[in-house]
Length: 161
Image (tube, rainbow, N blue to C red; front, side):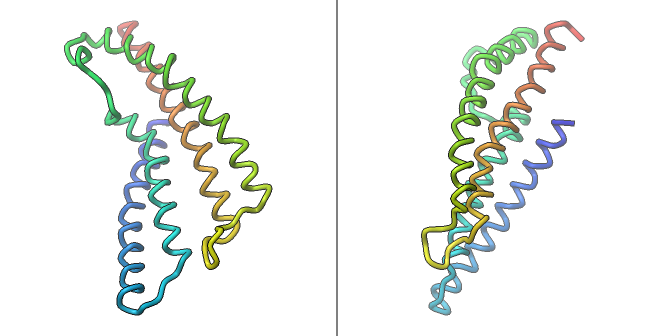
């Protein structure tokens, strides 16, 4: 279930990259052909770029495409790999996700409380900025959930199931 949700979000973020390219093309054409620009459209490209990375993180972890220093890992048996992954998730991944989520909560709450909008005139209006900043809480939750899926796989592998 969580794997499917991570895959769905990962694929949605992949499609967002196509949309981001199209919007960038529109911004360039408007600026250099029509000598006009929409600040909110330019800002949306930056935010879409951030969302692609933040939302795609859990999917990247699920597909095991994350950065891994595997000098010894490749030669290990599946059980030893499971132990390495189990320790990595418990010692590094979950505490980091907890810390990032905890630190982001105040940041996001302040954005909602202030009804934050873009500082640029003609930029993204409220509630776009708080919605986008909320991804800072969603990302560690999604990565932590994917970490729990990895933990369950590790336990099954270690038990020999």
